[in-house]
Structures are given as structure tokens and as C-alpha cells.
Length: 247
Image (cartoon, rainbow, N blue to C red; front, top):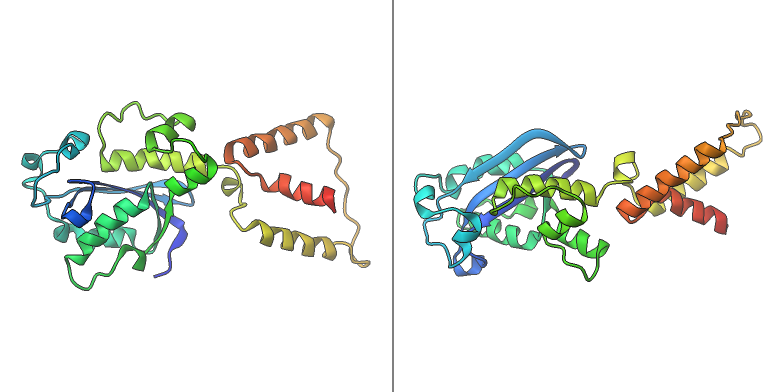
């Protein structure tokens, strides 16, 4: 199924250790659904019985215990509900290789379910952050501090809590053009703008009313664009204005 960018799922997992290749298992899945970049109110959250011990240190990070997880369902018990929830969405994951490795390993223990990428596309916020802030720390906590996202309530790692925090981080990290309808490719937008410019210069085109802006309005507009540029790292209007000035 083709993934829809109108429907996104912010996803996080907690595990018994750092390596799925060593037989570590998923103990918690947390998901937050976005519709048109806004939380829809729908979430998916399950604790899972891993049928194995935690590796040293992993239990302290999550605050979970085998006693707590003993009566929780196993991955096989919730897999259908989980796949239905994420099917066809774009997944937003921080350090996606980690979570996808574990989830695909869980799916591989069951027959005929394929991989996560058979059902979804993935946006890795760690890769986004590294492009935006090269050479800087880009952990979830570091991004919260840099983007003014409140994570004071995050004393332990929890899948749903981290997915909720990552939702705020992702929206701040990608804010600007996407929120005002400029998510498309810049080159395509320029092409369409050029075609439009040709159309409106036709001889038979009716006269257009001319709107004059005040100096105060021009300054407010410039300040708004500068704010978008600073927050998003890129502003399409400023790029188009630069192209026009160079022409």
C-alpha cells in the first residue's frame, strides 16, 4: 500500500537491549497519529512480554521490569492491531534503523508478514536533524533543548511519552514551509511559477488590479520571512525572490 503523507505515525519502541541480532525483544510500542501535520487524538500503546531477560542497563533506562511485563501480551498477540494502525502511513522515527531493526525482527518470527517498509515509508528525524545541525548533538533531549520543546517530564524512556515528545520535535524541526503549503519540491514550484508568469503576460489577458503595500506591511512581511528562514533553515519565498533578482 502506498504511504500517505497526509497521515503520519510518530513511533517509538523500548527494548530489552541494544541489539536485535542478539535476540533482544521489543517491550513497548508507542505511536501518535498525525493528520495533515496535526495530532488526531489517536494513539497506539502496548507493553509486551519479551519472554527473555533485560540486558544490563536496559531495565534502568525504561523503568520496566519482567514482573510488570509478565501478564502483558506478546508481540504476536498485538501484531494485527499494530499493523492495521500503521498501514499506509508515513512513519516518523528518531534513529529509524534501531526501531525498524527490532520491529522487522519481531515480524520475521511470524510467517508471511514481510517488513515495515512493505507497508510504510519512513522519515528519520535523526537524519533530518543531522542535515539541519551538522556536527552537533542530535539526540532527542538535545533537540528538545534546541527547539524549545518541553521534556521536563521525561525522567525515564517510555515509548508513548517519547513518541509524544518526538511529535513536538518533528513539527518544530519541519515547521515553516510545510505549514503554509510549500511542502513540494522547490524546482517544481519554480517551474510552475515561471509558467504562470508567461500566462499572465498574454496580450489578451485582462488588466489586473494593482495592490500597493505600505512600508509597515513590507517590513512585517520581511520579518515574517526572516523568522521562517531562521526556524526552518530555508524559506521558499526568499529563494524565489533571489532567483528573480538574479534574472
